[in-house]
Length: 246
Image (cartoon, rainbow, N blue to C red):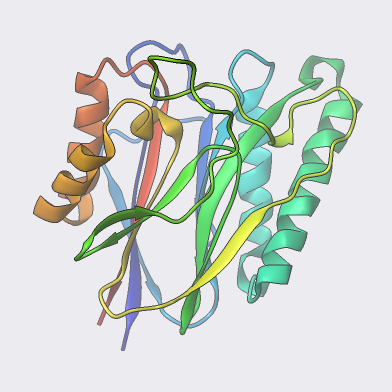
């Protein structure tokens, strides 16, 4: 019987006072907290399984509220996410939910979040994102980004930017989103990395690739986190490693 493993970790980093990242794996959510060690969950392959991270927009209020709201919505939608259209509809509903919550409380006004993840079905993987959190395909041939960054080109001399061109919420007036959603066949032994930019902005992709080549499961998650911390840990770090086994 084939199964799906999800190894997850979320950490504040070394600079931020609190964690505005959230994570969902099936019905399990992790919101605005810290995992001292990677946690591994095992699910049967079959019913659609959603695994995603959400990164509250820094510099605006209540990012942790927006990210938590998003992953809890996705957890509720999870088993119904059996097509690209269903994923797009769910992300649009998340966007409406973030704006609705912000509209009810002045302290939440302009809160927003990015989101990126994958829905694992028995025959395919649906990859999705809004914003600059990422999904990476960690195949035997190397590491390939399969999400699409919603961010402008970095300034001269820089490799990253903190700006995003679309997010769930994040503005005073409602703004619709156009989610990026794609389908890929589910290959035996497939591995995917879903993460916030607290990892990818500070650890070069070739280093991430090398760590995933050398390690699996909890050790891989720990080594990725350690690399981000050794790079200064300036942002929250949240990641989930998805693997297919039998």
